[in-house]
Length: 552
Ligand code: HEM
Ligand SMILES: *[C@@H]1O[C@H](CO)[C@@H](O)[C@H](O)[C@H]1NC(C)=O
Ligand SMILES: *[C@@H]1O[C@H](CO)[C@@H](O)[C@H](O)[C@H]1NC(C)=O
Ligand SMILES: *[C@@H]1O[C@H](CO)[C@@H](O)[C@H](O)[C@H]1NC(C)=O
Ligand SMILES: *[C@@H]1O[C@H](CO)[C@@H](O)[C@H](O)[C@H]1NC(C)=O
Ligand SMILES: *[C@@H]1O[C@H](CO)[C@@H](O)[C@H](O)[C@H]1NC(C)=O
Ligand SMILES: *[C@@H]1O[C@H](CO)[C@@H](O)[C@H](O)[C@H]1NC(C)=O
Ligand SMILES: *[C@@H]1O[C@H](CO)[C@@H](O)[C@H](O)[C@H]1NC(C)=O
Ligand SMILES: *[C@@H]1O[C@H](CO)[C@@H](O)[C@H](O)[C@H]1NC(C)=O
Ligand SMILES: *[C@@H]1O[C@H](CO)[C@@H](O)[C@H](O)[C@H]1NC(C)=O
Ligand SMILES: *[C@@H]1O[C@H](CO)[C@@H](O)[C@H](O)[C@H]1NC(C)=O
Image (cartoon, rainbow, N blue to C red; front, side, top):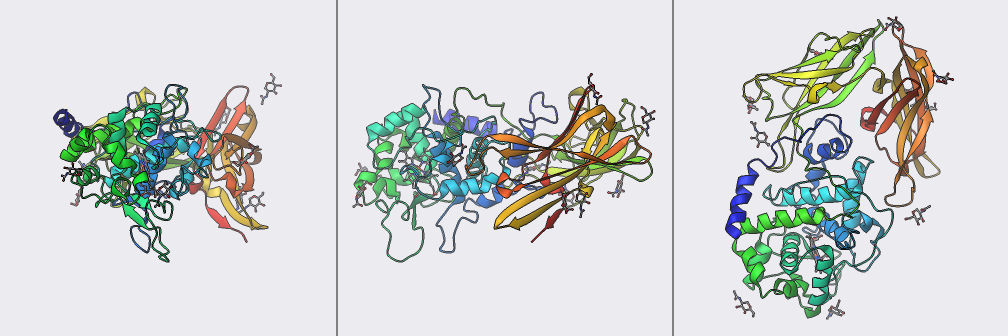
């Protein structure tokens, strides 16, 4: 068993991130944002989320406080995912990863800073396209990926739905007996063998903090630290030391041989089958890692029965990133943007990349050359997570009469030395001058009134044939309940007003202004024009492209 798993693991790891999402067509609301946060850990764009993995770099990240070793963010992210999942009832089809933990942090079963700190990292990328439960699942994936130095790559799916309030309690606690732990894990969908495996996997990193569990790890007086005692001697490495040291009886795991016998839950659990499984885990690190890949994948995919997860999200090989249209004074449109290409698809030193734009009526327009240069790259922070990305930029000027509807991408001398065409499933990458925000004429301002911070967003948009539309709106996604940690989203809609015609074109500039207390966030905004003939939209525009002003 151990052998087959280990062989399977090493065979799999060579193509774990081979770019391929079956039938993927850009843009895709379900996948694009999650794919960006997971694989664009380093980016040329300063968008939120593009550096989350850096906080668990080397596993400890910046989590080692001034006193050293007090908090391991990777461990906090993994524990958060488990505590959120642990109240699942798989027979009833309820609970699981649903971010309900955020409403449950005052419970005795959820002590410590892990949950609020994990939320603190990931709230910046919480959006209608990235639920907090999808982000907590991703937090576990990134933490374990980084802490194992790329040896545990958990396949990641999206589609989780956030709870609107607290769920039932039931996270296992260390003072409970083996029978209640066995029953609790059974409720979560794990038998005794799987319970031992999952606990050993979880307790491979981090430790017990005396500040939160003084009955397990007594606090020396006046240290002013969180007083962490780690589960094994390699708390910054996701490896089988926790099992090895347990089996060898030289463990420092406070939940196995801590001074308080009542709270030795790891001891009781690891011995629940007479010590068989923990010995297997101790015998082979490869077996440990492949077992944890399987068990942690099951853990993060434990969701309410009503939730349908997406396919496994793989890195997208060729992906438009930021595309812009700006009207010139002479009746032409300046079109520019970025294409993100995986290093498995293009070679930064050799490939030539061409953009083939199509006019509004489908006519081929002059080809634009896309270029890259040193430093225009990104990708993952830890091995085996995904490819490096090369960012290519392009620009072209087209007549406003022609307009633009889409483009295809040609890569000459690609990573395999061939020429390949990318037509996004046949109809090209959609990109239209029907409706676009004009970032250079837009702005955002942060201001403080009576100690409340406000965000204002002023947007100018370019609208083609505006007379066709009865309504042109700036739409901001905001939480329904601003005082809840997370809440369902609602759309705050502002009608945009015509400003002026763009000379020599059929485009009109529209402006709209939105302001709210900053608790409403800076979630990407939409512009939608509705008319009798058609509805056109520009969705999920990042505030990071909007120039920022500050007000007292
Ligand atoms: C009977 C089951 C379990 C019990 C009683 C238990 C108990 C505990 C306790 C008391 C701590 C110390 C927390 C702190 O001081 O911050 C801890 C830490 C941790 N647990 Fe568990 N745990 C269990 C299962 C799991 C599972 C299944 C996972 C994940 C797969 C997990 C992941 C973690 C992690 C990563 C930490 C370290 C947190 C940090 O260093 O901040 N635990 N656990
Ligand atoms: C041991 O843990 C139990 C359960 O948390 C607690 O009630 C007891 O006071 C602890 N004993 C000591 C000596 O800390
Ligand atoms: C560890 O301790 C247990 C119980 O005292 C004992 O049965 C076992 O042989 C010990 N293992 C080692 C490797 O010393
Ligand atoms: C491109 O060339 C530079 C300098 O010769 C080299 O350091 C780099 O590794 C090359 N990159 C690729 C992707 O081959
Ligand atoms: C592509 O990037 C990955 C991840 O950094 C790296 O392991 C691989 O060697 C790169 N491949 C090429 C052809 O440069
Ligand atoms: C526009 O693209 C051309 C290559 O086609 C490049 O030489 C030029 O620098 C680009 N201009 C800007 C402003 O990026
Ligand atoms: C504006 O629209 C009219 C009517 O459809 C068309 O005849 C004209 O060519 C358009 N002008 C430009 C610059 O697109
Ligand atoms: C801010 O944006 C609005 C709307 O796009 C625009 O009217 C205004 O001139 C801009 N202000 C500045 C200072 O750029
Ligand atoms: C944004 O628009 C509001 C309302 O029109 C205006 O008062 C404010 O000055 C604008 N902000 C900037 C930076 O121009
Ligand atoms: C849309 O259709 C309605 C009814 O047919 C008409 O009254 C209205 O003027 C039309 N609006 C536009 C913007 O064409
Ligand atoms: C908003 O959230 C807060 C905090 O979770 C809660 O106390 C309050 O009842 C919620 N309000 C509504 C209208 O749901």
